[in-house]
Length: 278
Image (cartoon, rainbow, N blue to C red; front, side, top):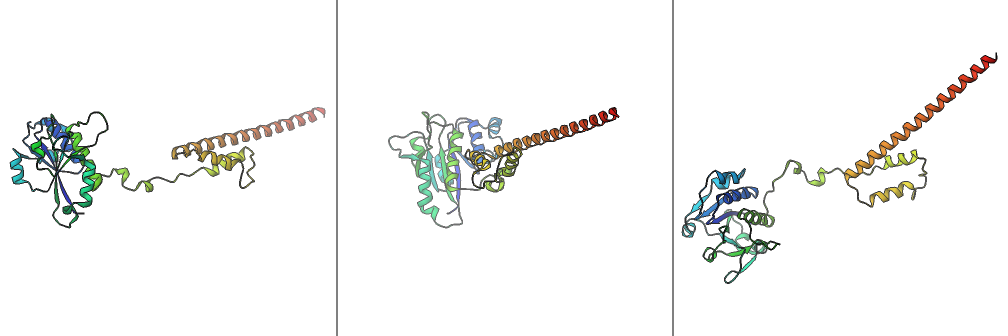
């Protein structure tokens, strides 16, 4: 599929902190081109604080005073407007539905080209969203799915969810944490049941394990594995069995030592009695 150039367009934004938070959300999702149309706020240290470690989009933002200037300068590409309202003139569908259809069938995305295909994601002002005039030239009008009674999203939340949805469908290079450099199946050690320790523990208790198919070992093993224990639970079982084995062996050694000491005392007493008789 053809590469794309994704751009976030904020229309008449009211609060600088929201724009800063949008810049941070864009950095999370690997998008860097931020366009402002007729912003209603000034940008001070507050927007920088909100952007935190995602300053790039905010610092490199492009601002247009009107839609006319936007269309004069920006390449047409594809425009997707976001809204939490439907009604007359707004044929609204879920954003994932639109993106999946575009991925599968849009001619410009299917053809091979060295030039990335430009996609603008449009977001309206915080008080009332995009107007009919704002979306009149948009190719698609979409809503970001919500599940509660309140369908209105904070501006930065809307941008983050929209970009996450876009990445889920169109892909991109995932951020990898240090612990994620290898596939998870290669990181995890295989779960090993402590067979030998359990056998030693049962033998130490004088259990008969001579029967091959069904004995106390096979029954206990099957009972424990039926609960699908985790690696941590396997380790805990191993520790308990080893500790129990040590205690039993120490008890046997102490009993043997006591028996030997008792035998020595008996022999000494016998010798003393014999000497006394003499």
